[in-house]
Length: 87
Image (cartoon, rainbow, N blue to C red; front, side, top):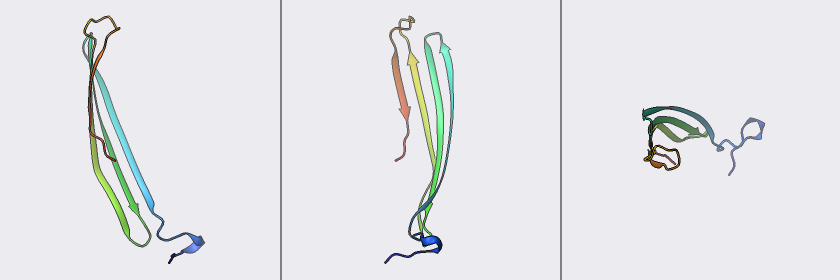
């Protein structure tokens, strides 16, 4: 059974509100070593007009990466990356 509201819209159709912020910075620790750090914050609220469906709040995702040029000539690079991700 389909529930229809004003304007013919299905009342079970979800509505979502999304917010995402990202901050990042880079530090040149040595001439051949760079560290990048960042954090992403994301929140999603999904509801229907009939019931609350889903809330995904307080999703903090830290990100860190290190870039090293062992010969300091710009031709060879070693990367290391860590990040936390949500579906």
